[in-house]
Image 1: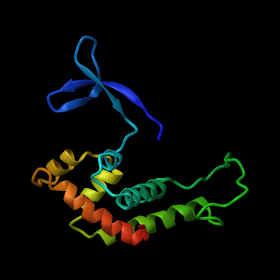
Image 2: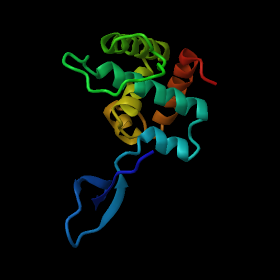
Image 3: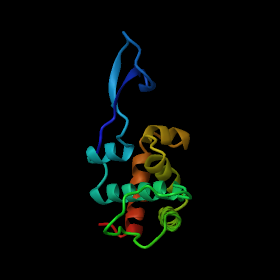
Image 4: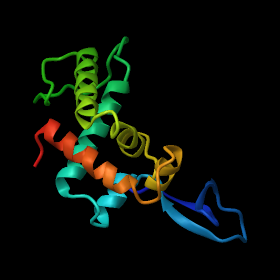
Length: 156
């Protein structure tokens, strides 16, 4: 993974979203690191849960891309990918269908934290506060949701 390091001002809650001011306390923050990667690197998620989360995020990102309507400047691909033979719009529709199926497989009670952490990139403490959940409950619920998404994607 490519790192995007930026100096951030330290506050009582942790690094703020503002760049560091001169003379104040600061910390280097990797903006490219997702909360899912953080949890996996510290052993809170299994490889299958991490892979399921990354696959869900990739489908979410592909589903959000608008189809190309003008000339395409992409280099010509010699070998097709997983969605070979499909147009850009069809790939978007297929990714949206996979994303909707995976979220439905997670279930209505688990989909909220799943979307917030995996797709929106919120940290678990922020997601717990937004959902008015007890502290440290989000990790358990996220793991359950990722297990169901791994079953949907047939991972692990």
